[in-house]
Amino acid sequence: MNPIRLTPLVKKFLIVIAVIFFIQLVTGGSAIEGLFGLVPDGFVNRGRIWQILTYPFLHHDVSHFVLNALMIAFIAPEIEIAFGKKKLILFFFTCTVTAGIVYLGIQIWSRGVEGLGAPLVGASAGIYGVLLAYGLLFRERVLLFMMLFPMKAKHFVIVLAAVEFLTTMSSSRNSLSSIAHLSGMAAAFAFIWIEKGMRNTRSSGGGGPGKKPKFIKKVDKKGNLK
Image 1 (tube, rainbow, N blue to C red):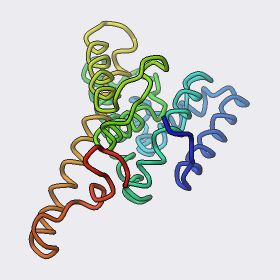
Image 2 (tube, rainbow, N blue to C red):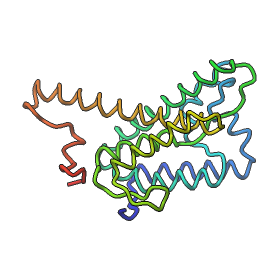
Image 3 (tube, one colour):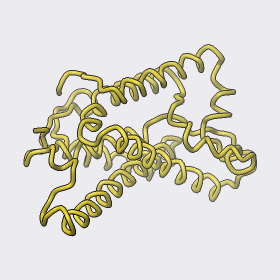
Image 4 (cartoon, rainbow, N blue to C red):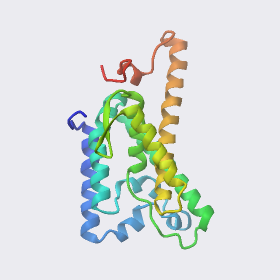
């Protein structure tokens, strides 16, 4: 795997989540999670609609923060290079907002909004979306699954999705998190597929037939950056 080379947007995001996590540690975190985490009761009954955008910046504990920060640092810079800053921001929030909506829907459907005070926090849905984009753009790159097993990016994404799907079939507490992760990956796939179709449509009308989408032009046949 390539060494970490932080790009401007990724660096800013890491600084922001690090500062917020430090504040969570200092203050105890529960009040901040209740206000800025995605809490079904707060979102629906108290009108805290900003939570759908703020919950990815919070984390439950040190391991949660460190794992997410490492994945962002390793994977996201090359997606920023391929997509550009504005598209990456839109892409990331498409994944996290979609996951948040799915989470809210499941919680409200299964339990109702009364007394649902457990917050959803963390950038995992966006990270899983970025991982899917990485698997599509850099198919032949080798990643370490579970930090141990070398695997091509295209296979890594398939195995990751399969693991998350199997987890959703269990009755454990992790099943909701896995549903959020899968929702992020599904949103990422839809985003890339729709964006590619729109660019192909525009290029066939004025940019010349067969013109590839902008982000595809930066990737060779093996899925590596040119």
